[in-house]
Amino acid sequence: MKTKEVASSFMADCRLRGLSHTTLRGYNSHVERLIQLSPKFPPRPENIQEFLAKLTPYNADAHYRTFRALDNYAHKRFKTLNFMKSVTRPKIPKQIMPVISNLDLILLAAFLNKAPIRDKAILMLFIDTAIRNGEACNLKRKDILEDRIIVHGKTGYRVAPISDITRDLLLSLPAMTDGYVFHGTGRYKNMPLNSTGFYKVIRKYLRMIGYRGKQYGPQTLRRSFGVFHLKDGGDLKSLSLILGHSNINTTANYYTPLLTEDVIQIHHKHTPGRIFENVDNS
Image (cartoon, rainbow, N blue to C red):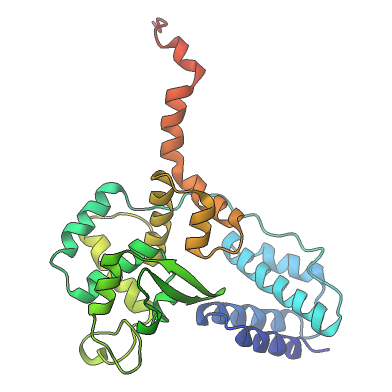
């Protein structure tokens, strides 16, 4: 069996399942590389292992997950042996991704007072609901309900709660015949806003407030929502549902490390080392 045939069937299945364009692009790029590595299917596990070892950890893990998804699909569809079963998953070094602070949030609110209505709606949508960039691209007016929006994303559709001010801002935008909520400006005013457009709007205002993180797009606001939610007393289960995670462990793995500052404060308050505070250190 040719790897190209298996890959073609796999990608067709992914499209039928409604995966996002971003996910499909990534999958397609990875399976094309697999076709080059091994024209015949299934590939040799040792060749896959050697290939992954040459990539950066994050790139290697992305390829690994695609290959594993294709392997599982081929096993069910064509009854092939699981070639990824003996391939070691790349280890990704842990790092704490940056989020906006309370001060950043206050400054954003101040700058948004004088912002165009579309920009206000975009920032409020991401800050209030923590939806993904691609989900914002798919948002239509019919999806805006009284206290929630219907979100269409990579895991299908889900419900995301919204506040009154966010709903009012979304409905105050011009209604277009295509039904989409957000559109471009200037010569693109009749075209739905794409993921790059959302990124540019958010980057603009994060730079205005002096934010110095590594990332400036919707994902930064999504992570920040998670941190604010947990700091204000929200629980992991509700956060997992709001974010659209299929597994609560994903929520815990991504967002618990971001609360390092709170953990340090709790440590200072409860450490038994406090008994030595009055010990002469001279």
